[in-house]
Image (tube, rainbow, N blue to C red; front, top):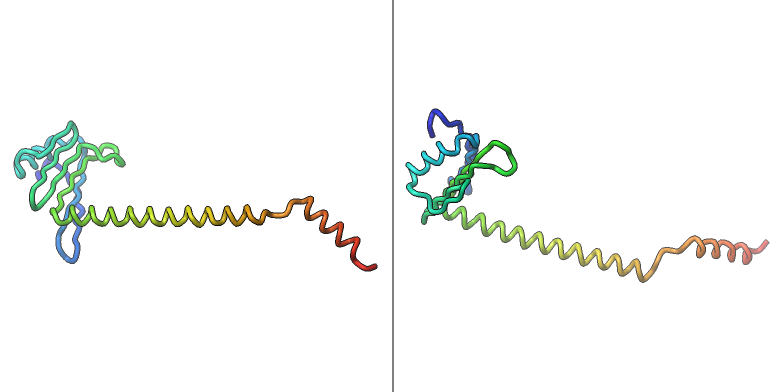
Length: 140
């Protein structure tokens, strides 16, 4: 980017091909990074107080002043349009699997609860009665 901005980059590859890069930088450098991106990509497609996005036919770029999980850090993502689609597909698939597993766990929990209701554990009174009865019926 520029000598006056320190950026850390994490690159992602699928099947040996570049698909995205995640950049992180100090939030105080957001304006400078925004300026560099605007020079390179033109006017942003969308703009909010603390973020800019450029959405094209082949790539998507988003820039954020703040990273929610890391105070004082901003971030940007640059991804191919194919990667955006693939990530969305994987997210839907994982969400569907998680909902199926959650539903399955709920069913087995209900089954356990039903079986416990059918055959409740003996109470102390029941156990005491059994001991008392067996003591009377045992030969001496």
